[in-house]
Image 1 (spheres, rainbow, N blue to C red):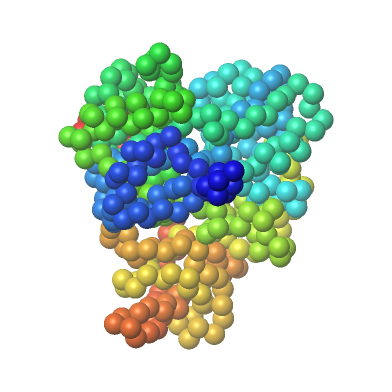
Image 2 (cartoon, one colour):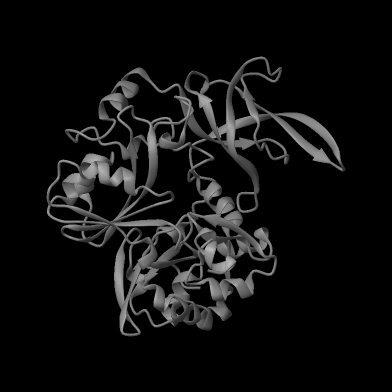
Amino acid sequence: MTTEERYAGERLRQSPFHPRQSTMNLREAWSSWNGYKFADYYYDAEYEYFCIRNTCGTYDITPMQKYEVAGPDALAMLNRMVTRDVAKLGLNRVTYVCWCTDEGRMVDDGTIFRLGEDRFMLTCGSPSIAWLRKSVLGFEQVTVRDITDETAALSLQGPTSCTVLQQMGLEGIENLKPFGITHFPFHGDTLMVSRTGFTGDLGYELWVKPELALTLWDALYGVGENYGIHPYGEAATNMARLEAGFIMPDMEFNEALKTIHFEHDQTPLELGLGWLVDFKKPHFNGRRALLAEKQKGSRYTLVKLDIEGNKVAEESWLYSSKRCNRKIGYDTSAMWSPAAKANIALAMVETEHLKGEVWAEIYYEKELRQYEKVARCKIVDKPFWTPERARLTPPPPY
């Protein structure tokens, strides 16, 4: 056995789209996601961000975990595991969900695709097969299968995304509603398209078998050249999702099963996901703890902040006054938003201080010197970026 063969299993796997992505990653800016080699950015994160907002871009979501849950007990099992009522999910529809420990701490969030009466696909950012296998206990007629490596997936996001798919020959794609699923014949197989994404903009996610991944890529880029198509990585994704007010693991919340100290994780109610928790369901993991929290009130609440000035409040403490005497929270994500033309952040704030003043203690560097600034923060209710095209059916032509 050669040295290369001996350590082959320890190397990062390559997505089926990697042969095309590697030629476009001019900076060789790679990171990893669930054991896959994954682009942080290709050339410039800001440029890729503007492609999402002004034209369209592709984001490889093959490393995202995908599980098939099937059988007569599939619906009951998922309804027992997640906080949302999956029974309300129609055929060929997608819904956003989260699931918790018995203490009501959030394990992860993800999406559920209803592909048949008794067949679902669960997607999430981190491996969850062990949790799913525990959740199956007590249900005899349900199977869970990891289909991550059996499915190549590409996210196509931005205002020209629908036009690109039309030019690719996906007839009627403009009639697909948000969170809807449709299927098209594709080179002797099937291309599944969902109107979903993680940018807050008009966008779609495309799902094919791995052997058709490069065919899909070439078809998209063949027609998309005139519509500004460009790949984007994790850095641009993080900018777009923050403007949309979407939460990210390891930023807005720590996954409960990976957290050592109790209450260093979060609950759905703290994260503003109370609308995902259906207390009308008779039972689900964490129901008793979440009901008690709802009655008592959460200690922290995730909020959106509009911060004065242009100094990004990255990793800043929050205070109840400009004197910075009393800490009341901390920023989880922050950036200068090109779309909103504002200094924005997501932050955890002690619930009792939501109606009072909020000030951020900001540290920044200028020409190798460190500076400090205290800036007033305004709590806002709506996402910083929520274009009408993301909700319209059909979306406006481009």
